[in-house]
Length: 297
Image 1 (cartoon, helix red, strand yellow):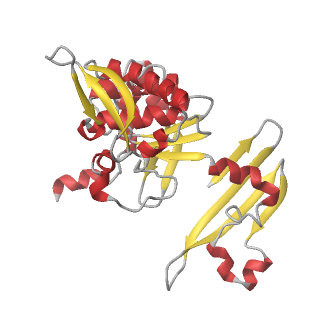
Image 2 (image 1 turned 90 degrees about the horizontal axis):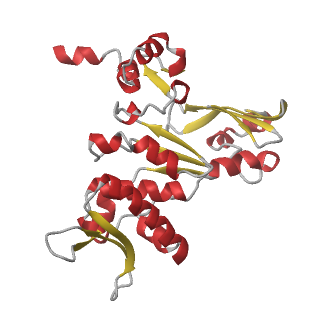
Image 3 (image 1 turned 180 degrees about the vertical axis):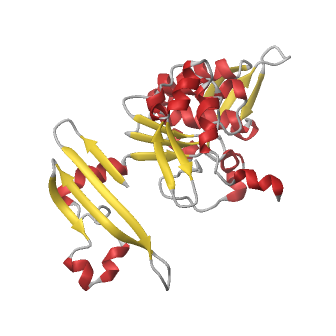
């Protein structure tokens, strides 16, 4: 990993290479760790201390408060990165599962508590914005609200759907579709304005038409932060507002994975210029070279 960051004044560079123990517990070890500020070298590992005590290589200097004093800005940036891959079943069946909550809650187990912990006015404002967007994707949805169970005090989301009855029908989150829950989670975290938000395949559980609208939805709801999305969906990449230099291709091979920007791929640029959708033009490049051999097995 080689990351360059700027904070308006200084330019930071952080390099990290990880290897694995050749025997024993097969733990990940620091092979290389370097930090630079405006070209000045602040850290270079392994160092003489690592040579004396190899156990030190089981931890990066970045994660240790006693070691990252001179480059705490980098540590703070990474600490602000948010990863979200909301699993609807963890919300629908939370009482039955009652599993261990992972740090930073990447799968949304505590998503309702996250909403409950938000101030009432801010919560209502965010839910109103989500409601407005959801109504474009789910026309039957009339209203989205937060409530607490009168007996247990547990937080819930409820939505009112248009119905053959005059007053419609209310449903709680355990009756929402997987796609609706994923959209609510995505649109909520976008409004939290994380410095960097990582989304893994947000198209899951959604129909093609909605997936095609995700890019403009994300653009409209995100704050000042940056959003990185992984996807295998040509529909998500169908929006004409996505530029070639905004798409990074990971090309797997037997030796390694190569990273290239779509605007550096001449055939992709020509196909898109000729009218082909960006997803259709670039996704064939992401197919492993050995995948065709499966057909003959």
